[in-house]
Image (cartoon, rainbow, N blue to C red):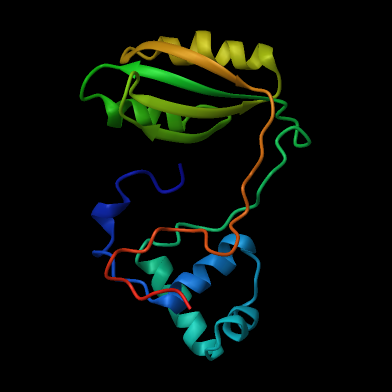
Length: 175
């Protein structure tokens, strides 16, 4: 997890997003390499305004970073799995730090329900995945149990028109 989960403690309270901010987010979610000029033209503002808005979205923690969407199999990470963990109560921060250090950890979430943590990992092969689960994860003292769900096929969903965060009830309507 880039930046960790304590981001809210480091950033100011969220400011409301207007329709231009939401359009900028949609463009950058679709193409994180879009130029400032292209973004400005598409949302009908000056380059300086687009630049300032993107920087504000970054400073406010709305945009957490820019990354590439990777085909893990072609990148030598042919085995993927979601791993559910039950952990000792109140050990989330300790466990999260240890999970972040795992090779291949791609996403970590504290969740509600029958388990406490959902972990997505990518490894070169099933043998490496097995080692990660049996040796690394199950040796963490706060981890009570794990369940591994192999991923047979993945599809990344590209943000399209109308996708993205659900606007608050008092937000301006999309144009």
